Image 1 (cartoon, rainbow, N blue to C red):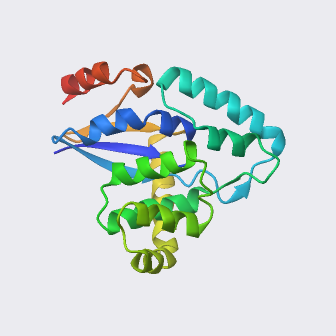
Image 2 (image 1 turned 90 degrees about the horizontal axis):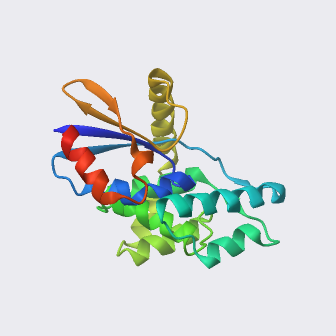
Image 3 (image 1 turned 45 degrees about the vertical axis):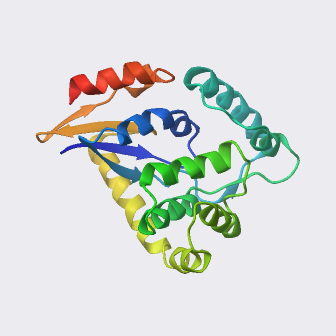
Length: 206
């Protein structure tokens, strides 16, 4: 089977912008997506002086990719309260969701929607548990697995960084197709908001 290596972060705006492209990849039975989480932002409050830059970047992402940034999210970024971002907790949730039977692209999309549309506080474990329950997962089992997930998450992030160094990858999202031991970087940025053309591009490669 042809593999697609996807280097991403749940809290990466451009990865959210690429979500429709990832959905196309996931729907192609001849492809297997290998997810490489990057741990881009260890838990921290974003400085108010940087928030306007975030909103401007989000506007550019929305224009190019057609994804929707919700009012609740924009209010959090622009508001007076702390805006805390945590790639590690959301990556743990991404991994635990898969362990409990949710397909990877569905879990990632749910996390992205909760953050970028609904403005949920995903640095808080209770908010992630609420998301899990909304997806039909058992809360007690979820909490147990989340409590034991940090070491596995850190190992996966470390492995992602090792591969990124080896392949000279400097940012997210990055998509690389692996076929017959050959690696080809996918030109995904040309296809933001153009899923039909993206499908044809992938079909030619596969």
